[in-house]
Length: 168
Image (cartoon, helix red, strand yellow):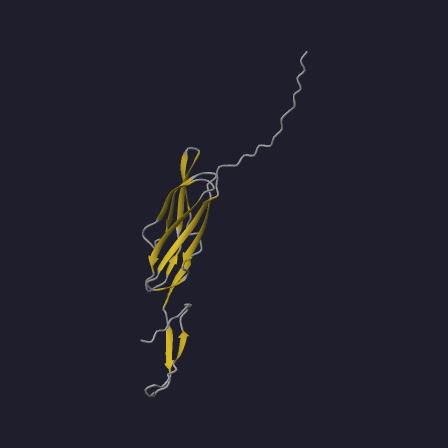
């Protein structure tokens, strides 16, 4: 005689709905205050926080550049960086990007697009404005020791480090 004991199996099954979702952070380097002629890089860190792979990630910022930054694919839970650079002119610029991407769901390709949802960042061009005053004895004789005093006044919004003064 054979006895078979069976027990029911119980388990919770969770279904995660398929969705496309990106987390995007933007960085302006070296910062929002630059001088004319300085290279400015706008960098985006993009993390796919959805359950679907996304394709054709495009960041357009026509006030900054005519060439969009593009990434072909980004798998779920992956992170990527996109960036573009420009040389600061004499006027301020505002970065206010439009971001779009595509994903496939149910055999159909869908497009998601922001409508300039991120807060704009104005990149101000400041002018270096240092005033250097040199004081010392007006009349000196050969062999006299001369003491010179430099007073530097910063009238701009820029910060300076390690200023070097050379007397030639």
